[in-house]
Structures are given as C-alpha cells and as structure tokens.
Amino acid sequence: MPTRRRSWAEPWKIKMVEPLKMLTADERKAAIEGAGCNTFLLRSEDVYIDLLTDSGTSAMSDRQWAGMMLGDEAYAGSRNYYHLEDAVRDVYGYKHLIPTHQGRAAEHMISRLLIEEGDFVPGNMYFTTTRLHQEMAGATFVDVIIDEAHQPDLMHPFKGNVDLDKFQALIDEVGAEKIPYISDATTVNMCGGQPISLENLRQVSELAHANGILVIHDMTRVAENALLIKEREPGQADRSMEEIVRDICDLTDGCTMSSKKDHLVNIGGFLAVNDDALADKARNMVVIYEGLHTYGGMSGRDMEALSIGIYESIQYDHIHARVGQVHYLGNKIADEGIPIMKPIGTHGVFLDAKRFLPHLDQDEFPAQALAAELYVESGVRAMERGNVSAGRNPDTGENRRPALELVRLTIPRRVYTQAHMDVVAESVMEIWDKRESIGGLEFTYEPEYLRFFQARFRPKC
Ligand code: PLI
Image (cartoon, rainbow, N blue to C red; front, top):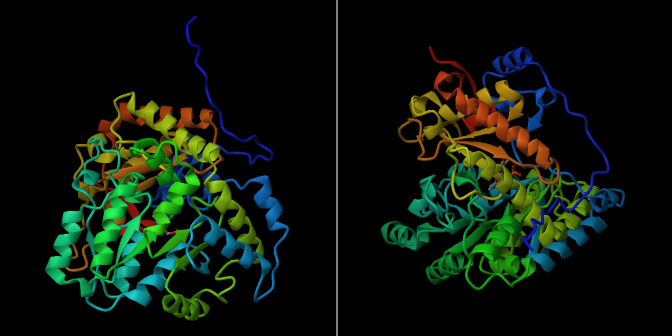
C-alpha cells in the first residue's frame, strides 16, 4: 500500500470575518503615487492582503477576547497587572515586570538606564528602533552576528548566532567597562527571522558574564526561535516549548518585549529584569514616559489579553502551524527560482531585491521599488528591509548600504489562509516575470529618524 499524504491544517477555525477590498490596477497605481512609493503611507483599506508587518496584526483567540471583558481599569494595582506578572514569571522566569505600551518603550528605558555616553553595545544585527535608542543614549552599536547572516543564499541553521570572536575582539578593543550589555535577539528580524541556538546563547552568556557584561534579550519572537531550536538543534527535539523558552531566558539578565508579535495582541509590551536595583530604577522611569508601574501604557483589558497570549504563544500546535504557513509561502516562491533569504525564517518570507533587480544600484532603493511594484501588481502590501531601513551612517552621512536588501512579506498570525498565501506567491511570480521593467527610486522627503516609516520617493528618471 502506498503511503498517503497527510496534510495538516491551521489549528483554529474562523469565528468572525473582516471583508477585504480589491482596488483596480489604476486605483492602486494612484494610491502608491499618493503614498510617495512608501507602503507605510498607504491607507490600509486600499490594501488587499496586508503583509506589511506581523506586529499588532494578529487575530486574538476567543479566550483573549473573553479576557478583554475582564479588564480591571483601576489606575493603580489592576488585577490584570498581577496576572501579567504571574505569566511573565511563570513562563519566562524574569523576576521584575515593568509594563510598557510596546517594545520600543522598553528599549528606550533599558538604553537610558544602562548606557553612558561613549559606550558600545554589541548585538546580533541591528534592529531599527533598538539601535536608535542605543545611539540616542550615547552608545555605538556594533554588529557581532556571524558573517553567514549577511549572505542571503547561504544555508545555516542558526544565522542569528553571535560570532564569539567578534564579541571578544570588541571587549579587547574598547574594554569591558565600556560595554554595559550585549543585545541578543530571538529571532533576528533584519536578516529574515533567523534563530539563535541555545548553545550559542550559552557561550555568549558565559563570555559576557565573565567580563561583567549583562545580556539583554530582545525576545520579540522567542517562541518562534524556540521552535527552530527544537527542530534544528541536536538534543532538543524531545524538549517542550516551555523548557526551551525558559532555558533561553535563564541565560539572560533581562528582556525587552514587543508583545505585538509572539503574544498575539494588538498592543503591549514590557521590560523584565532580574536585578532589584535596576528594576527600581525602571519603575521610577516608567511613570515618566508610560504610566504607573502597574499598567505602563496598557489598559487592564490589554494586560489580560496579553497574559493569555503568553501561554498561547508557546503552544506547539499554534507555533508549528504559524511557522509552517511562512514556510509554505517561502517554498512556493523559492521553487520558482525566485531569490529569497535562506533558510526561510519564522515571521515572513524575505525577497532578495539585489538579485531580483540586479540592474539597480542600492542607492536607487531596489527593495523599496519592489515593494511598491508588488502593491501595484496585486494589492499585496510588503515592507522594505534594506538601504532605506538601515538609514545613514551618523558619522559620514552616507546611506549605510547593508549587505541585505530585502522585501519582507510578513505573515500576521492566525489571519490569512493558505489560499491567501497562494495569491501572494502568484503575485510575486508575476513581478518576477517583468522584473527588468522595474526602475529605481529617489527621495522627495527624508525624515531624520527611522526614515523608512515616513519617507517619500518618486521614480528616478
Ligand atoms: O514595534 P514595537 O515598538 O512594539 O517593537 C519594536 C521591536 C523590537 N525588536 C524587534 C526585533 C522588532 O521586530 C520590533 C518591532 N518590529 C516591527 C514593528 C516589525 O514590523 O518588525
């Protein structure tokens, strides 16, 4: 008897729907021109399938919605804060919780609390808001990710890993006293959602702690990273998501969290640390920028949905299907010979714009142009993750021209079906077929900070 194929499907069914609108090609062309060729500046109602980001765009579960009804909206001491504190301690093990409205508020606080002017912060590749907060606090960010991370076509199971030699070289060069912490992210967003291994984190933690350097964990997508540790790291296959996530956190001294990703909520985040004195300082700071230390920027109902989302994020069926959907899309695109960042990561499929549009110089912003073209072709909204996102070198004023010039097709959690993924893959194939006709872009407006959010462009003549 031949073995029959056994498909797996999403471990949820749909209870409420939101209709989608599809503009005509002419309307989409007018919309992207009105948006200055920047997909961030489109109105979402003009988008058919929205793959701009997986941040705050997930579908909450019925349990999370039920939790929203249990909001205790007291200014101080809301019961939902204590549920959140219990969940963070239970799942991640960090001792102190400081809630914030989203991840970058936690980044702001940890940067201000730990960095002194002239310091250096190593990290496994930059993230836009994380690096900016480090720089604004007076530090220089130093990329210590392994070289493989910068090579889109190279297969490596843990492209997010820190290169220990680079980390050691920085310690030797500037001195450990100039390095308040290393920033280690699970997973690494800017290189395609690539994971770190537990083994690498263990070594990073040993080297950092031997030199009196803290390890601050950007755990925005820690559950997704844990799944790939389970699937790829020797000796981890039989361990539970809970165990792996906990091992990751136990190797670090604190975390910043954007709950808008793993935790399946539309808003929320936190800073969590183990050190009592640091926690006191953070609690003192949060009241200045976010709100009282028992709500940060969140309402009671937000905190309740978040507490429930923490547990849902580490359910194996959920995370397996979530990452499986990303891989389904990625394989469909790669099977056509279309260049993508490899291996396929966890929160999106990243098109390699340098190889997609080799006729464009990086200062003509190929990834930005490709994202605009994809929208015009099909109403699919993606995001540039290349030269525009990387910004300018503060010392030279030049575009940073990163090795990776990517368009991110980011998959919201529990929102789209396999049929949507098919439409996206077919849309990418359409623009692949006419890639030679796609031209470059130039700025008409360039904001000073995080320019990718609000910049405007026009076709370069
Ligand atoms: O968007 P926030 O402020 O909740 O979180 C900032 C943030 C920090 N670290 C990492 C790795 C992120 O991916 C991140 C936000 N990412 C966004 C918005 C994204 O579209 O990927």
